[in-house]
Amino acid sequence: MIPFYTLGTVYFAHAVGVKFNWSSIKDKLILLTIPFALLTFCYFLFLKNIMVDLSQPLKTFLDFAYPLGDIIPITLALITFVMVKDVVLRYVV
Image 1 (tube, rainbow, N blue to C red):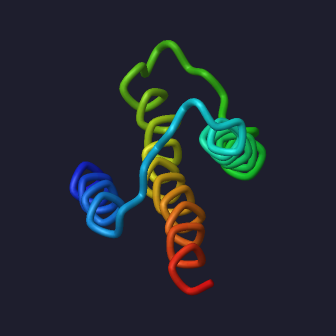
Image 2: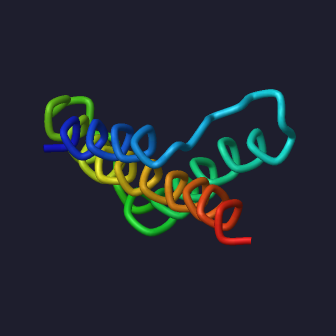
């Protein structure tokens, strides 16, 4: 499901007209701070109390991968929301 959420968000961003431009400092800040903030939030909320158990590597991997995998579509959705807001405001004003 996560790849489809991600693909849908990317297609929605392209359909609306969002351009990810690495030359703008504002876009760099958006594209770097939102994922960092959400990963930090995810760590302190979900992963802080998980112990690494090397005797069960699959369980340990899934304990870390499941919350981090859920953050990816949320991160892309927030980035798309912020970028779409800028595109819509450009045409309204």
